[in-house]
Image (cartoon, rainbow, N blue to C red; front, side):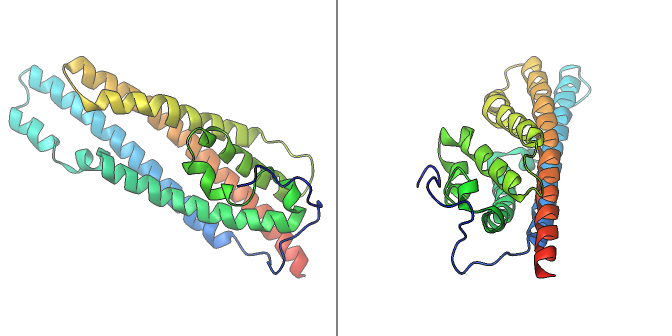
Length: 230
């Protein structure tokens, strides 16, 4: 993939492509983001439920059967690896479908040279190790700038979203996964619940900001498309 679109005229447009509505994709992405956040909250509830159950067991207020039942209930299942991966993959696909369409529209609006990365990075940036620490940010921020009706436009919303996303996924999440793999004491269970609380707060904040980004870009592009059609 090329690292940039340098050398292309600012008004260059892909031949044969037309603007596409992103309203439906934005609605789907918003619903899937909300579903992902609900899953994160349910995992948090499950982890705190486990802690209180362990606490009661050690205090003699719960039985081993209670612990075994909790280890196989819906909360435990939702928090396990594969269900969590499935939720994130589905949510990610929803966002990528919207982002791909928004990228095409933004190229038609402002030219390919308004973007630092080739179109293939819209998908590849998220799955390329190391590069996924900053290239997705560049892709989204360029779509944001190219879609804005007035230039320059502040990217503070993008900055806040990406900072929360990176801290959650690349700092806090690895710690939480390690902590949840082995419980040797009540304190281990409590620490896992506390870290999960922080992780969930970061996810919810980042998710809400991402929804705002999706809605704002969609509104800009829809307004531009409506004006052009008129």
